[in-house]
Structure formats: C-alpha cells, structure tokens
Image (cartoon, rainbow, N blue to C red; front, side):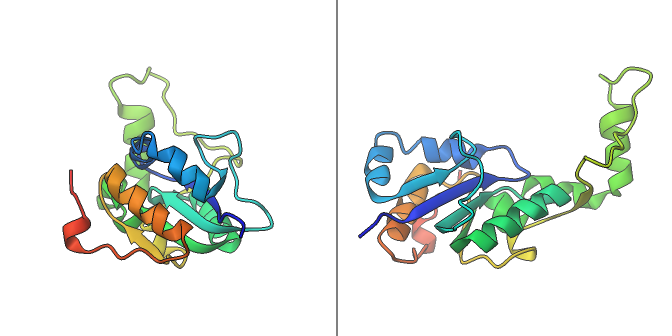
Length: 180
C-alpha cells in the first residue's frame, strides 16, 4: 500500500502552526515513514500535486484574493482538508482587522505608521492580491477536519497526522486539546 500524499500551505497568520509541526522533533521521522510529504512552505515544493493529494492542510485565515485561490486549489487537489490552528478554524488574530474598514487598515499600515516616511502610499498594482474581510478557511471551502489551538500542540498535530496517515479521521475530544 502506498503512503498517503500530504500537502500543506499557510495563509494569513504567523506560521506558528508549522513551527509547532516542527516541534514534533524526532517523531517527524516516524511520520515521514507513514506519509509522503509532497509540498509545504518548509520544503522546496510549494503547491499540492496537480494530480492531487490525500490530505491537504491549511494554516491561517483567508484575508485576500491570493489566499482564496490557495484555499480553492488545495480543496480541489485534496481528498481531506484540514484547517490547522485558530486562524484557519476561526479567523484568529488576523480577523481583528474585521473591526475596521479595509481602507482604514491599509492607510494605517502604509501611510500613518511611525516608521513610514513622509511619502508613504497604499500599494496599488494589478498584480497584488486584493484584501478581503478575514475569514476562516471553512467560510471559503469545505473543511473536513478542524484542529484548533494557537498553535495546536506538537502532540495534537502528531496525533492528527498519524490518524490521517492510517486512514482514520481523528477525533479531537476536549481532553486532548491543549491550549497554550
């Protein structure tokens, strides 16, 4: 039997969930014996295989049109989609921007910050992604497995990936969740 193919990507967030994944430490060797890691922000390959993968994992909320495209591509190319971490599951800290108008947030970030020179301007190029309201991944595409936490602990991530690698949908009961 071939190993399940896994692809990961990150959206709007801090990359803490992927760092927590790396905190699995030597258990990564056990995991790599069970899965074929096809693409990830922490590897050279950045996109899921065009032919598809078994498990897709998204970290971070969706805050612009580029994130939407990544989420749709991952959903299209995977059988099981995992929302990893509070930003992917709920919108997380990036969703605090939703309390403000996008124009106000952009003006503050690019024009009004203390570190901006006198000629600060909001970037406006057709090649740039358009900002949107920050959303959880499930608000844009269907999610099969939700793994909350900021970030989820290495033990939870290892459990989830081990279960998925063995063809089982992980069951996260409250006593298994460890909030930081």
